[in-house]
Every structure is written in structure tokens, then in C-alpha cells.
Image 1 (cartoon, rainbow, N blue to C red):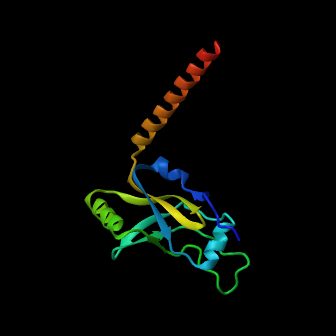
Image 2: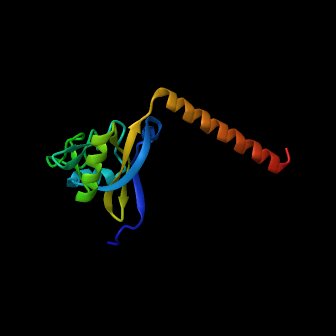
Image 3: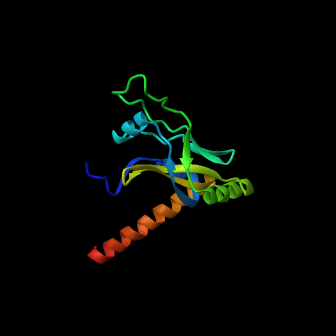
Length: 157
């Protein structure tokens, strides 16, 4: 059987970039059981309410929904169990220091297969206030209007 190559996205957390200001991103491995991997290969996962916590020097991913594998039997997993993330000790210590200093959180942005292994893109993020979200929306619409007008001028309209 040939090895998988490249990046195959399983799930993304689109709401995270709207609700949080992303300060830094990390790629982490994730400890899974066999039926979870089979369910992910079917492309089923949800990162909607997911977040990560640091407990006793280990990073745990919570509230990720990976549904039970359809062909599994008594070996099936529970869909919303906490899952251990795999990072280097230096990265974990760095994250612990940053989270303790400010009101920052760890949010998963996406889950994907990278060369056959399941990875999670984890973001160090700060929550946005309602006025920050409105400012971002206003900037985005202004940028779209400028691009639209530039396109019209290039086309001679």
C-alpha cells in the first residue's frame, strides 16, 4: 500500500478566526484510538466548541466531536472524550508561560492528515470584543469595495 503524501484537511474551525485574534499557531500531533482514525478517514469531525487546556504539563484537546465509527463494535470510542496533544516539552513550557501571563486561550483551527498522520493546527488566541468584530467586518468590506472599483477601472467600465 503506498504511503499518503501531502495534506488532507478533515475539519476546520471557521468561527475561531471570527471570535479570536490569532497570535501564534502550532502544529501538534494527537493521540487517538483506532476507531477514531477510521472515522476521521471518512471525513467526519467537528471542531465547533473545541478548546485545549494544560493539565499537569500536558496539553489536552477537549470537546472535539469525532463520531463513532459505523463498522465498529465494542471497540468504539466515546465521541467527545478528551484527547492528548503531542508537542515538544519546549513548546509546552512556552505555551504555559504565555497563557499564564495574559488572558489567552488555545483554540484548534483545523484538523488534517499530514503524510498519513493526524495533526491539529492549534492557535494561541485572544478573544475579540464585539466592537473588534465590527471593525474587522468594516475593514473587510472596505477592502472588497476598493478591489471591486480597481477591477472596474482596469476593465474600463
